[in-house]
Image 1: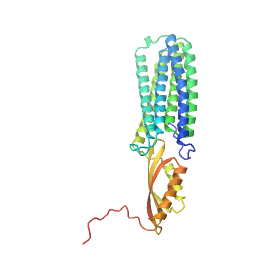
Image 2: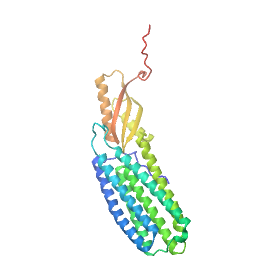
Image 3: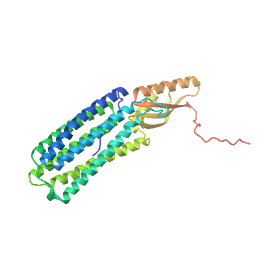
Image 4: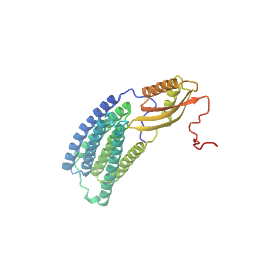
Length: 318
């Protein structure tokens, strides 16, 4: 399953404070939903003798852990830059996405182990009460609605951390669907449907967790942004008055923001002060129109070869 990526072609109108407020609000909604589902699923699962529903309740409990990880990361990522973190603390979000991915991976592996254990001893699967089916269906609807709400917020404010948490909710909806099918199969006299379906969803959840963890790890290793967004930033630089060319653009992600450097070409006959003014204007335009946290510019003269990258001969000519 291919996960949707944030649309970076359009610039977000939201400030850091607005993004933090949206993240906090949507995450608290998720906390409330998961508390209610955890209590309901585990309680009914015990009385209805449904191990699948109890497992789904534990899955919902893992979401509470994920929600608090997001809340903590959202809080610390808004801290101002300091001596130890001159670029700020935005990578708390990336670290949170890594934790969420690993949590999904562990939950998926747990579901695989539980399903395999049931397949080994199908005669131990008890007959469940029909009440468990209604609770599983209610959990499915609640999780799907929560997913759509959280993904809409994440897409609007362009937060990869919230996207990861939203898809965590979707994985729970898939889990509740499997639980519902398993309970239905149990009621119809086919107890093996539960562990077989759980194997499939366990693989899906584990794969999703691996993808999130893998992407977050690469972002922590300074992976650059995609080419379409680079071209959009390049165009903004080229449209700045006085800029004749742009090259050597390098980018790296800082949470959901970008830190970059670029070489801009200006008329060779300009003074240092005039070139500096153009560089400042170009930087301001990029920071205003794109999700760029900082841009370091290097001025190159235009209309003559750029030799500043050639090896320097430090041995004097005789």
